[in-house]
Image (tube, rainbow, N blue to C red; front, side, top):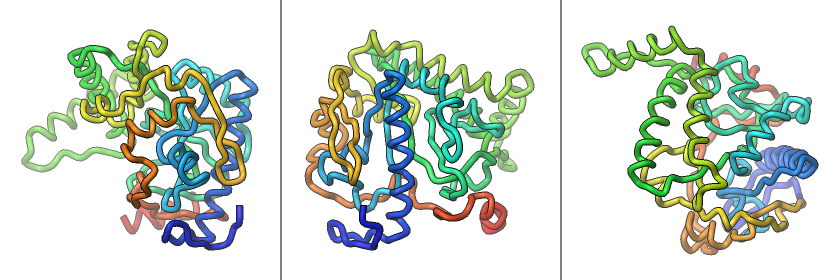
Amino acid sequence: MDMHEEIRNGYTVTAQMKRVWAIQMDMAKKLIEVCDRNGLKVWAASGTLLGCVRDRGFIPWDDDIDMVMLRDDYDKLVFIAEKEFTHPYFFQTAYSEKAPYPREHAQMRYANTAAILPYDISADFDQSIFIDIFVMDGVPESDVELSHLLNRINKIKFYLQKKTFGYRARIGAPSTWIKWAKLKLHFLFHSFLATYRSLENELRKQPVEKSRFVTKIGIFSNMQYVTTRKLDREWYKETIYMPFEDMQMPVPVGYDKVLTTLYGDYMKPAKAPAVHGGFAVLDTEHSYKDYLETCRKKA
């Protein structure tokens, strides 16, 4: 990949972003190599899948790489991650972090870099440049069952997120004081990791192999998101490879149906804001630790 600034689809891609992309592709190659060697399936997802099919590389305004796995393979990867990913790679989950880490998916991080998101500034987990490794679970056939599942998930996510980022009850607002009290009471009897395990166990209750549809239920746990983003498991039955910048990226054989479900007329470029909403700090040469104190004072 040419590391100089360039114009893509009328959008300026800076040399700095090219350096970030290069690090992210290095991590993606490592992830694919580990999965291939261990018989695990992983595919490009979301904007990265769209970039493979339409742009043969990064969407010009994208700022990361998204990969996805089905639950069983994802769980196996988490189990072997510590021995498979060593410096400069760090496979980040709630189980690998000493500080609370509330995300329902994994991220691979690259040492001695910085990718600090505004909403993560108060958190104490690793905030290096990353790629996302999402996990897809089975979707219950019944909307009633799905609604009950999402309600259970969201209650658990409340505890995880507030424990990580903090929670303050507003003065004179009884409902927030009740939530604050529930939060304090919960963690008197349950650890963060025990709570996180309960979230994953809820997601496993609808096994992928017994489900016609799968999706990233844990990410945005609401009915509209899940019901409009149900993906047929058969679309992921086989893997093919497509060029992505200077590498080959695994994609599901049913990529056209996946992208049509997610984006409609996906071949027509439409600039959209990055999912993460922009970074407070993005640096390929210095650690996030060099920035956190200053970022927190500004925040």
